Image (cartoon, rainbow, N blue to C red):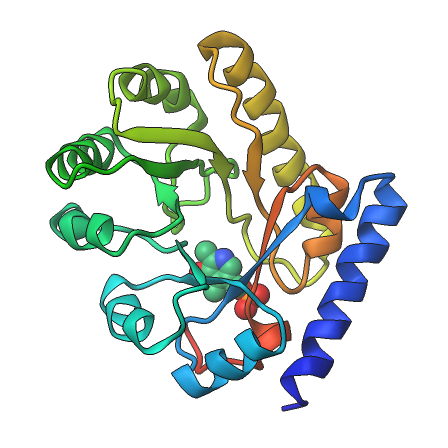
Length: 231
Ligand SMILES: *Cc1c(COP(=O)(O)O)cnc(C)c1O
């Protein structure tokens, strides 16, 4: 693998070029460095090289890594979350949880946040493609979930997240990203939640996501190198 600084510079220039092409400002898009499965030494180097937001997909792994790294890092939880882990998750003080996808989980997070005297920022993960293997709520459940969220004073719903089906041609993800943006517009209008955040786009399709309105891109492989298979 190349030097981490080289990788960061390459991803950064892709984000900049995508913003330029879309007529968007660079500061409208935030890079989440997806550090799952990567060792703390590499994360430390990445932080020293300028990365400040790390995304983990497993609570147990995040619990081990967070205390080993400097305090200035923001941690995001991007992976599927089980209700039996919510207490630990709230305790971790994740800056943002991207993957809330059921009423049961929402209510469990609210309860844990209330007990721990915290307010937890979250995104709702939507399965826009309807692909069976993906987590995320069906679009039809978005408004009812926002209705429930409006009665959860310890949660702040900041927007939506999606993971499109993988395709070799990243352009094929475009309709899914566009659909998330449209859903956001409709849901913001109907619910009164501003839903400003759109978390979409990964290593191979971040340009398309930025073109379609992403405000967070979640990049792992192109920063840290390939992971073991099936992760
Ligand atoms: C692993 C992962 C990513 C990063 O994917 P890459 O293709 O390695 O950039 C982004 N989002 C989620 C939810 C992930 O689990």
